Amino acid sequence: MSQVDYEIGKARPDQLPPGVPVITFDPYSDEVMSNPYPYYQELREAGPIVWMQKYGTYAVGSYGSVIRVLTDHESFCSSAGVGLTNFHTETPWRKPSIILEVDPPEHSRTRKVFSRILSPRSLNKLRERFEQEAHAMVSRLVSREVCDGVRDLAEAYPLKVFADAVGLPPDGREHLLPYGDMVFNAFGPQNDRFRECLARLGPSIAWITEVCQRENLSKGSFGAELYAAADAGEITHEEAGMLVRTMLSAGLDTTIFTLGNALVCFARHPHQWAIVRDNPAIARQAIEEVLRYDSTFHSYYRTATRPVTLDGVQLDKNQKILVLIASANRDSSHWSSADTFDVRRKPAANLAFGTGIHGCAGQMIARLEAEIVLKALASQVERLEALGEPELHFNNTVRGYSSLPLRLVAKDRKGK
Ligand code: OVM
Image (cartoon, rainbow, N blue to C red; front, side):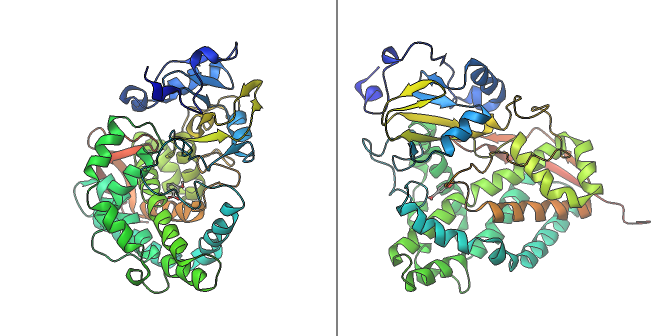
């Protein structure tokens, strides 16, 4: 191995304390990504904390260990980056996020502004518009013979309603997808997937930078509210632009893949679809189960701020730890029938949105979008028929599909 594999924060395998189980599979390989769950089980069974040989980091994948790491932000920080790249020793591909990749007290200031703008109260105003758009979109698709569930719904919906809510102009939104793909690839290793994505990125970065400027954001939007917070002195104007960037980084791929994963889940589990269709009030809970069963965000890192013991293992300062939230959501010591997709369970406290001070700030708008789309489908669609295998989109951090050929079979309205 080259020198770079052993820099600060990445202990040598031969320096490991005895008794730490070693896993040899590569969580970023196509093979593991095609179906990561058996590998996650192997990892959990190996021990509460394991050594990831290929990357020279620890990893946690059980429910308890994941919570222990995420709720102790003083020992396990975000300011060294929440990807494999250690910002203390390597140069990140873009300026670090001022909300994700920081610790208190800096984090508290930006998070407060963000949380207010994305609070349930402020989101209430969006519900009606979101519902109208979902109903219109679904009824157009139902009237077509076939559609692509990912392109025509999972992508189209957030690209319309969320981008509108942030305040973006209508043209150029196609840049959001390659940009988001890059953001999430960058939380993993600098592998071929990372490099190819960066090489394709071209003009998307410039477009994103441009639309984060105040004059390009519509009145009354989240973007406008961020700049208003700057006028009020809570943050600087430059920080307002950086927080618009966060919304665009974190708010599209995540909800898009969640919607696509939901469509795949329900196409594959028609009885589960029948439960939602016949009782749309369960939609919000059903989305929670989609997030537990096939989590969108699979993993990210924390970094030890000091020598710290985790599950009996002594970690050095600067050590990176992979936190596999998608694995915690399948931990059979926490969930009964963990590998069963069951919309009737109440998967509260699933870790799809993380937990602790960095728990997803956008989770309420993510749930709102998904619930509304699912309810629109429930009111109009009898069955979701997959017309072929969905196409998996490979990304180092988020899991979802790039295509799902689909027929949405209309409900028979006669006699109903
Ligand atoms: C950000 C950012 C990017 C991706 C995800 C995220 C899950 C935040 O730029 O702040 O939160």
